[in-house]
Amino acid sequence: MTTPLLSILLLLPLSVSAEQCREQTLPTEKALPLQGDIAAQEDLILLTNGWPMVGETRLKVMFWELYDARLFTPSGTWCGGPPYQLSLTYLRQGRTEQLVKRVADAWRRQGLDHPNRADWLAQLNSIWPDVLVGDNLVFILTATGKSGFWLNEEFLGGVDDLDFGPMFGDIWLAPDTLGPNNRARLINQQATVLK
Image (cartoon, rainbow, N blue to C red):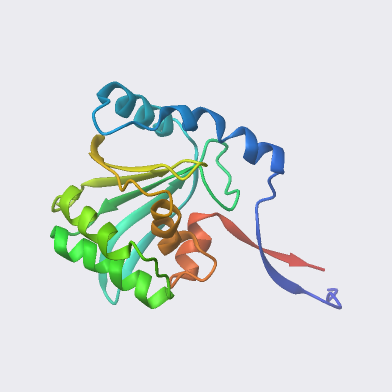
């Protein structure tokens, strides 16, 4: 039996070329709907529903399982940013106020701040409904920063600020997220041993 002289454990994302990342941004940029454009809303959710999954995880707090999260991109690989679809399937019911409070708490704990933060939270409070077990809340962020929310494939609306989408997605996807293990599973980081 041989023992390697040096084994280094590194977490490396699947390698993706810059060209693959650029190519995956084009179709979604034209499709993000305006609030009243029902056909465009349906087109975008159908378009992104065909994207391959990058990774998935289950969020647990102590012994409570809150939701299953899945990340999708046009190529099925994480390129470090949009476009992407983040899908949350709830395992517990939750009131709108609780969901919005969790967003505010996550931003506070991550040190993420913005002058429009209070306004964004108020908008989320007005567009998000209460969720039931099995409900699927989808967040889509395009490469240009446009974003929107769907619940069970019905368009809810969005926050009309290009700074909002990246900051919302950072709760799960930023390198300094509060859930690094969940992030690693979402973006499909793999442990690799170099010898």
